[in-house]
Image (cartoon, rainbow, N blue to C red; front, side):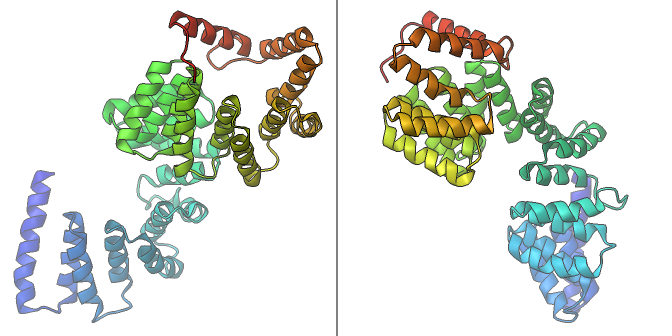
Length: 390
């Protein structure tokens, strides 16, 4: 690689000399632009390409090179504007579709990225990592299972690519395939210790396994790489909830939502923190924000039912509980208001019996049931001594 860079540098210097004698030569300007991109000099590449375009303003090769320079400079919108008409005029050019798909992915236009990358993913002329980029676009669109197919195919063919392993680790976690998520996270981190997706996946698996220390280490490392990352802050919020540290959990979830304001699960988790701190107004506001994102989530209505029950608003609690159980008859949150109501009516033993029966019927991710998980958590907290009043 060093030799290739030295050769490219020498060639570029030679061309600079030629351009002094023939400053408008389009082929030399184009070659200079290519070499500049290769050497990580996007500003120079843009300047030489623009000079070449003055003599051939519609040249597709030059326009494509200008788009590449724009991408390297972070001017994604300008790159997309250049690439769209080029890709439409040359649908057979896999490289153009690839660059357009990549630019759309960087711009957060995930549906468009998927469209362009899907069109060339099986084209032998397409760059090797097309499937990897397609998997990332599909992940953002919530198409997890389909994304895994493309990501796994690429990762198996490129076992040394830590970025591909990292993407796959988070995909497997979101598919709740924890063993695979852990395997690919470890593989990615072995090659790239600060790989963000792999740290997020590893931390999330640790939370599922009730490994508070391992989860904290992973999420804190993730935040060093990406200080505002919402998934990392939400992960730390879950760890704090496991520790029954409501004040810390609330702060973490608030930071998570600053980065991902439409993340429904984080709004619901924040609401539970607020509820348990008796900040009922705050919890109501958080749950209303959650409803604005999606009105058809059982756990949101269940949390609202519990919130109203905590305040003795039984009619409102019944309304939300019915809505929650209509959406999901197995909703734990949806049944909680009923148990609270029974406790208030002097039927606490029956309510507790029903709650434990439901917890014993639902498996925990680490193993056993939800009831077993609760028991493990209580034993862990007892062994560490009484928690502070939060």
